[in-house]
Image (cartoon, rainbow, N blue to C red; front, top):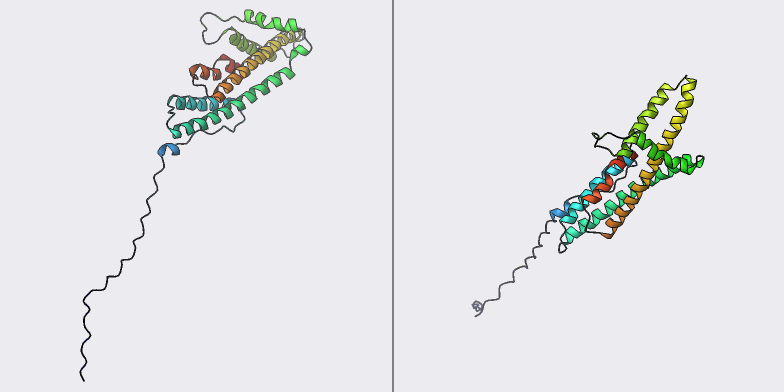
Length: 228
């Protein structure tokens, strides 16, 4: 008995479905290079001169960012807010140092045992004695008198040893000069502290009117006296 071959089906079986291709994961977008630009960081030093320098730099950066501000750019706003916090931190640290100078000067103030009116008259008197010449334009009368009194104190201390008559006169002169120096330093420190307080308030409010006049708060003859 012969076997017949199996009939061939009239239709073809559907081809097996191809294996699903895994969806390609889109590559992450590269970060905005503006976000990678470092902002300044709050200064952690303790020297008033160094803190002042840090304030000048951070405030300058803040003014630059403020001029380039774009309200429709969240990156710009983020950097501006971050820099605002840094400026606030630096300025508050600087004002704290100046306030310490005020407290230190007040604790050694000669007015505790001298008449207030007498002490108050020393500043204009010494300024008249040490009046600067018209050719000296680098300092005003107060700074010039302060520098001259500092120099005179040093010369008196160097030459008064062993000379009883001169020493008695020198002591009186030294007393006046020390009072003058103390009073000038105190007044200057108080003025600087008030100006720093106003500047901190302007930065905290985000005033857009900040400019070179505000940078001048960190410069000038008053700082030369404080940092003497």
